[in-house]
Image 1 (cartoon, helix red, strand yellow):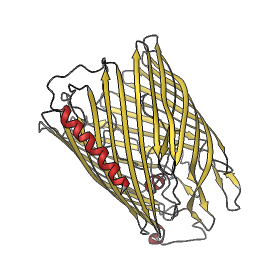
Image 2 (spheres, one colour; image 1 turned 60 degrees about the horizontal axis):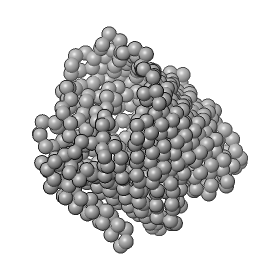
Image 3 (cartoon, helix red, strand yellow; image 1 turned 180 degrees about the vertical axis):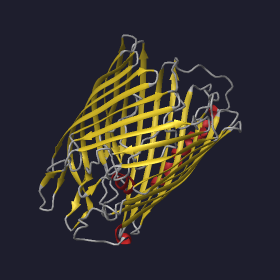
Length: 542
């Protein structure tokens, strides 16, 4: 089959490249740029398309892609604290001053909500990094809202073996079991048994990757990845995904570089019928740097149901020693809409889905920088989107949702972010988005807010007590009511507070109080959030 040939060619090409570059003996100096390889916050495995339990700030990395949508599943919100430093499974670096083999966080909350997270990291073998994680979180609020409950369990393992020639070979595997319940009905006049409203998602995933762990004589950094997953639900609906990606960067004069990215994705969705989704893309580009100015010129070539050509350009000007950075760009791509991505956004959907890919452009400009301990960003994005998916309640069963696609949506987004480290022990932040959606076929951008912002602060008291507070606010989202008319839900408001106390080097305790105002806001129509809830527990690092 053609897609199999595409995957094999992509992966084998970069294996051969790795073998050639691994035979070199000298190592040129890379671009003078600091590479951050250890996260000090929430050190966990990267879970692809994982449903998050907490509305989070956009990434602090200014070069990372920022989504203008948001996701708040109907789960208990949790406040996270620093996990131990875990050595990343990537470029080899010197050991961090403090590395723990085992990290465990165990808690219990109200409504009944057990929580467990165990992370194991083996750093004692010189050429092998091994990382494993077990996770469980569930809650049962059936006493107040019939069948308002959920359960998440997962197991992940990841390892990387470093060869002497500068080649790193990695592998990962994972298992997820998620139970959600269709509690979006009026339990004052209707009642369902738990098994009648249960939806269960089971996911198996695995992958291999090959990359260079050291600079090589060719001056080429490369990585090739091969991935697989199988997703099935309670109703015998399933999807298999196979992907291959490869990227390479050739350095020129230690400050310019040529990049090439190739991605091949194949999805087979099965319900009463079978549907194939295949996306192949090429992204060549050239990046140029001269003093305070940097520019990137490239193109995105994508093949799915149609051939798509998009620009991939950006320019940046840094002045006042980095305190002010002016940037602008124009990018685009094919966004795969799969059973996995759709159900991770809204697990209460109907099937069959009638899946369609979206084509997204982003034309953006803004300013960002850092002045002493103040980091900031202001950005405007205009984004035409073809086949943008929205969710509307099923007119025959309002506790489930249908997916509808708008042929042409124009999104204008204004984004702002400020982070201030006022004191060594105090950090405050704010992030906000204002969205204007212009739709062609639909009366509104169903279940998406116009305004949303997140603010919070962390404070370290007496070296052993960490305090954190966070506020999330969003305007009420539009939805289609029982008469088929446009209506709006109430605004969303969520205030959370947490504390963690370090007893000694190896043990600690934590307490979280979430939704202090006991707001019953609805992310999805008929699905109110949990009211005020709390959790207490212990933390162990060995």
